[in-house]
Length: 93
Image (cartoon, rainbow, N blue to C red; front, side, top):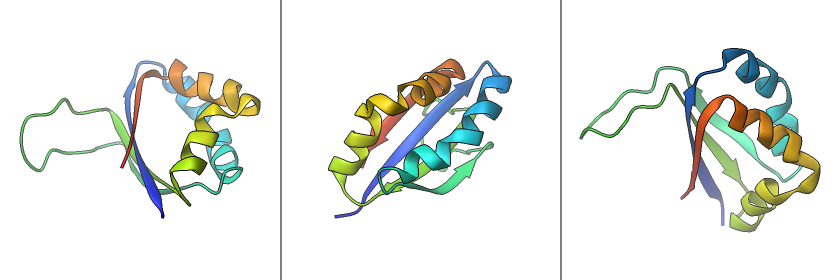
Protein backbone atom coordinates (compact mmCIF):
# COMPACT_ATOMS: atom_id res chain seq x y z
CA UNK A 1 0.00 0.00 0.00
CA UNK A 2 1.32 3.42 -0.93
CA UNK A 3 2.92 5.26 1.97
CA UNK A 4 3.44 8.98 2.27
CA UNK A 5 5.98 10.84 4.36
CA UNK A 6 5.72 14.45 5.47
CA UNK A 7 9.03 16.28 5.74
CA UNK A 8 9.19 19.42 7.90
CA UNK A 9 12.30 21.59 7.69
CA UNK A 10 13.44 24.61 9.64
CA UNK A 11 16.13 26.08 7.41
CA UNK A 12 19.20 27.58 9.05
CA UNK A 13 21.63 26.68 6.25
CA UNK A 14 20.19 27.51 2.79
CA UNK A 15 23.44 26.54 1.04
CA UNK A 16 23.08 22.98 2.33
CA UNK A 17 19.44 22.96 1.23
CA UNK A 18 20.59 23.72 -2.34
CA UNK A 19 23.10 20.84 -2.22
CA UNK A 20 20.46 18.48 -0.82
CA UNK A 21 17.96 19.36 -3.55
CA UNK A 22 20.52 18.34 -6.19
CA UNK A 23 20.73 14.81 -4.74
CA UNK A 24 17.38 14.15 -3.04
CA UNK A 25 15.33 12.97 -6.04
CA UNK A 26 17.89 10.36 -7.06
CA UNK A 27 18.15 9.09 -3.48
CA UNK A 28 14.36 8.78 -3.22
CA UNK A 29 14.14 6.99 -6.56
CA UNK A 30 16.50 4.26 -5.32
CA UNK A 31 13.64 3.06 -3.12
CA UNK A 32 10.74 3.89 -5.42
CA UNK A 33 10.10 7.24 -3.76
CA UNK A 34 9.24 10.60 -5.23
CA UNK A 35 8.28 14.12 -4.19
CA UNK A 36 4.53 14.61 -4.56
CA UNK A 37 4.66 18.27 -3.58
CA UNK A 38 7.00 20.67 -1.80
CA UNK A 39 6.47 24.20 -0.58
CA UNK A 40 8.82 26.83 0.79
CA UNK A 41 5.76 28.63 2.16
CA UNK A 42 3.53 26.14 4.01
CA UNK A 43 0.57 27.73 5.76
CA UNK A 44 -1.68 26.65 8.60
CA UNK A 45 -5.25 25.84 7.67
CA UNK A 46 -6.41 25.12 11.23
CA UNK A 47 -4.92 25.21 14.70
CA UNK A 48 -1.60 26.63 15.87
CA UNK A 49 1.12 24.08 15.05
CA UNK A 50 4.70 25.25 14.62
CA UNK A 51 5.12 26.18 10.96
CA UNK A 52 8.25 24.88 9.20
CA UNK A 53 10.20 26.95 6.68
CA UNK A 54 9.74 24.20 4.11
CA UNK A 55 7.47 21.20 3.84
CA UNK A 56 7.40 18.26 1.43
CA UNK A 57 5.14 15.31 0.83
CA UNK A 58 6.97 12.18 -0.33
CA UNK A 59 5.45 9.01 -1.76
CA UNK A 60 6.83 5.47 -1.52
CA UNK A 61 5.41 2.17 -2.78
CA UNK A 62 4.97 1.01 0.82
CA UNK A 63 6.15 1.60 4.38
CA UNK A 64 9.07 -0.82 3.97
CA UNK A 65 10.41 1.20 1.03
CA UNK A 66 10.26 4.42 3.07
CA UNK A 67 12.08 2.76 5.95
CA UNK A 68 14.67 1.27 3.58
CA UNK A 69 15.30 4.74 2.09
CA UNK A 70 16.01 6.16 5.55
CA UNK A 71 18.15 3.19 6.63
CA UNK A 72 20.13 2.80 3.35
CA UNK A 73 23.83 3.03 4.33
CA UNK A 74 24.68 4.29 0.83
CA UNK A 75 22.43 7.32 1.40
CA UNK A 76 23.70 8.40 4.81
CA UNK A 77 25.71 11.30 3.30
CA UNK A 78 22.54 12.59 1.64
CA UNK A 79 20.52 12.21 4.86
CA UNK A 80 23.31 14.09 6.66
CA UNK A 81 22.93 16.93 4.16
CA UNK A 82 19.20 17.13 4.95
CA UNK A 83 19.89 17.20 8.67
CA UNK A 84 22.52 19.88 8.07
CA UNK A 85 19.87 22.18 6.62
CA UNK A 86 18.55 22.83 10.13
CA UNK A 87 15.83 20.98 12.00
CA UNK A 88 14.44 18.02 10.02
CA UNK A 89 11.39 15.98 10.98
CA UNK A 90 9.88 13.19 8.90
CA UNK A 91 6.54 11.55 9.68
CA UNK A 92 5.12 8.50 7.92
CA UNK A 93 1.41 8.43 7.21
